[in-house]
Image (cartoon, rainbow, N blue to C red; front, side):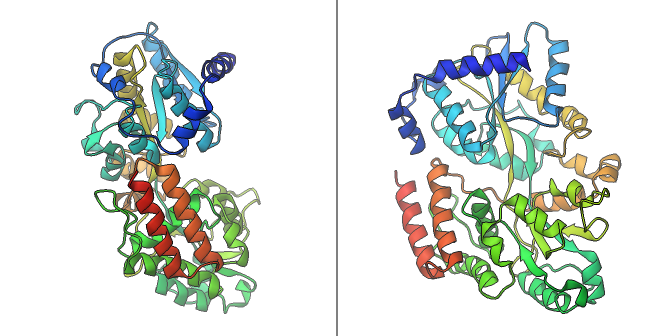
Length: 439
């Protein structure tokens, strides 16, 4: 840990002279044409020697285990783990600052899937050779999220998809034979469940509706589950449509009709977990990492043994999850690109993914692991998660993702809080997104 801390302090010193103008340019997404020479000069994956792996903190220790295994086998190509701040925004800022000054401090970058297009368009990461990563063995949605303009820029590291948690005991007591597959079925089930004496004081459903990335995710899923999209295949905004209107209206009506707890407008992932775990809601949309907390038998969970999971509901059938996760990419400014690529191949291999499952709850990119009996025995939700991931869609694949998600959050939140009606919010969102994507 001491070595990592010294490396991080050195990094802070190195990047301290990045100008305010450069940071300001970064915040706007920059121009896809500005840093031209960097990637061209680094087209060949040559050079072997020590490299740095740059990532958010890994509390499980699973990533360091893989790095230790690599270092034991490659003493002349040692990998040092540089930990970035916990805040995703701060991580992105540090990664971009390092790229803007063309520093070789960062070699292998751990990128949120929503950053892929921005980093690829600005040539802050290198396109990967077609045969570098075994993409044929990976869940197609994870590979798609690692591409920009049909070119692979990242190796899927882990992924994430939405799950729909529901109270089995209450549905059974209310005579609801199966979990809902549609939004209307969910509302009908709630009417029956909330009429039960044991459900007194409960609400129907919770998602993530505070004005942050969780709202972008929930809005994206509502629109996609109604058959719509945020942007089309060319990246042009498509939110001023009947499908988007139906998706957003479902969320707006959830507050108007009392389906959601009144304080759900402040919910992030953690608040939703607590609401379900404390027995305050019947249904919950959230990520797989909740499963262990909800299943705890130490008295901390009031729903242990009383819940199950399925796919999120949609308009006419099961809904469409938003894809989460991380990719690994190679900086064009690192000297030892051959080592960086070889390390990524090792680190993102199915063998390493399976080993990390013993320590981490991160969902692997390899479909076969979701059907492995030994894995499923410890993670019974994996087959359902695989179904969610198979149908998942990425968030908007745009270069200026920061500005895009901000516009989505502002307008969706305005509709949920009643500051704007649904039509006005979508019209204004469309205008903002058109302005952003035109730059």
